[in-house]
Image (tube, rainbow over all chains, first blue to last red; front, top):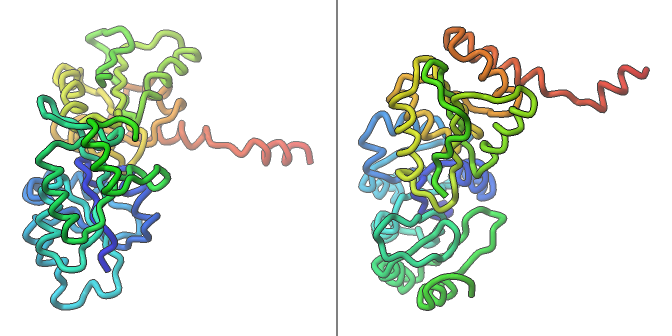
Length: 170
Length: 146
């Protein structure tokens, strides 16, 4: 069972391993990221952060699509939590993986010289990312912003409202 | 805020302690340790803030690491957190000791032992200082009273 996909540019870190993984009762975490998967040093250091009692797989986007489509049924009894670095990567997975219909915007930070709107203290979105998310939402993917399990949750409608008024409080 | 608060005086001969924490408590921790030990030298605290990108966080740390004397140590708050992911990466790139489980006893010990022992011995001392600092006071008291 594919629990949800989280977009977080810190990938596997405290909020993900220490807070979300137990909250979701995940027993498998998939990091879908070309850069980390293709760099043995990044891959090794990231795998140190593996939460206890959980299987961790660090895959390229293409490998993740194939793995998550689960042709041989190996994931039938697993609880799978998926992490991508960007909304672009998330869109690729959502488009090509069946039964993946819940996307958590968790950590999309402001990079310099980008026209980003603040949605929460660690989620900042631009026009292009909003377009990609809109296309996902049209296909009945649940999109929500939530940093940590004990933080409040913003649904897609609220994210759109915040974005159109330029960020800040609703 | 940027993560490059240089909070103590610099001296080129003493190995550096680099403190990586979620939020600003590493800065406060150094002040706390100074209440106990007096003025500490060559300690740099790098608070990781929620809106910081990894690059913004890493750059000032690398800036300090490039000139760090042999025997410098990275002290990290949470194993498996961003601070520990980054320290692991830096530890391989700069051949520096990086450890997690930061607390005030560990910091005071690190400040005393840096540069004086090999890495394994230093880790053993840091670990022991932490373990010896964990006490169930209520239990100790009860056992002493009976």
